[in-house]
Image (cartoon, rainbow, N blue to C red; front, side):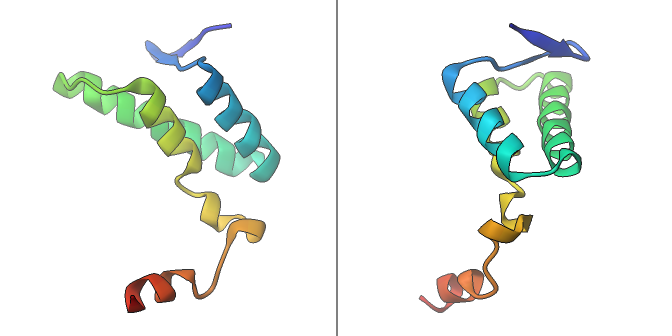
Length: 85
């Protein structure tokens, strides 16, 4: 089922559905809805500026962008190890 918000089509591919399902299992409603708004703001900004973009990639990136805020995906030293390399 295709959904559209503010004239922006929410991707409904197998990848987008899998990402949505995973994020819904991992994040609370507040963070999930924030991630959706990130997608919508990005898509609306791109549309306003006349940019072309891959909606599926933008959606999946937006869904996962704050996953590190969730306890089971958080690491106090992961960023530090990456910088030290």
